Length: 67
Image (cartoon, rainbow, N blue to C red; front, top):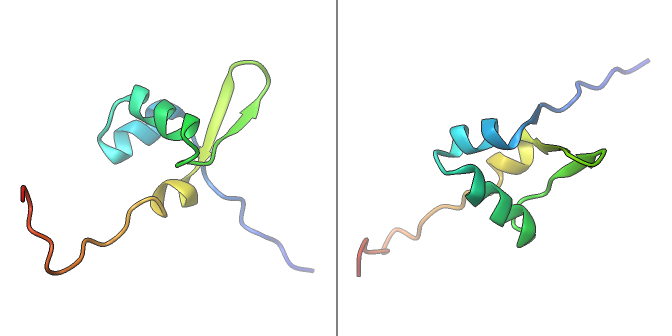
């Protein structure tokens, strides 16, 4: 019998701290469909750590910051 490891679920505050953004930014990402989140009841929202990690994307090597 195989046992799966449950994925880690984060609060909006924990997700914001990990990404170093505000909770409002996390809420905006969820509303825009950029970040997948799950609602458990009327107020409880959880974000899977895997979804948060997969948000980042590499910057093209020729990308110039500020220009």
